[in-house]
Length: 350
Image (cartoon, one colour):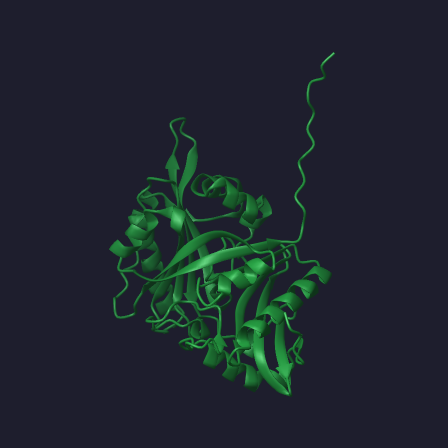
């Protein structure tokens, strides 16, 4: 690839105005000649744009996050923004924009290349990204060693559909729905393992301490829309059921983000195959209505929910609750660690 005269560097405070304009331009419809490129999330036709979802107020930009720009002839033509999970040393690419007819692809290549080099020096173990499968997005990351490991459907419930009334505590208890506690970590891990294909679970590699963390800093289970939880009051609930031996197990998990900023609310559901999550979704929507009213979060941007393509029939239950599918996104990940076989003892043959 021909070297360009521009350079990639860390962003400065003086760049913020230019970055805001670049981000705004990139989140519109992509031009046919490819002169403007972004991650393309979600696809056109939705009132929910990624610029609105992942808008970054300066006060929410944390010291360990990374923001890179591509500068050429004193003009900023590219932007890459990364959110870092300090607990797991994972970096998530939230925004990757570039402008310039015939040059946007080269600019984005340089930005990703710089990110991987800088991340390796800073001890990053995994890089994550979600993008629309168009305009060379997936090919760009696969050129840099990212593995394509899944897809998500993004669902949205528009604000003109009223939320259901909050579920009474007695009804929730009768249905086995209650808030999660740190001691639920083991059973949450088992639920996730039962609902997730083994290759995906191996790549995401959640540990018990990950399931114990709760609140706004709790970034699992991962999804393409997880970054908006930074701007939300996060809570989690489980729906318990009893196994034949009488030991309570979890049939469903519900993560809720009640928006504090100008974003939609967030719902994420994981359930055992065959479990009807209709009551869990109704509880979640009622909880959002109750919390939004109590904290005066009156942002009218609806509710979004990501669903992995292997999690059917969760998608059908969301549609029954008034959600519409607005996009399909691809999940990619790059590991910097080398996996080795675990040593085991074997019987000796004499």
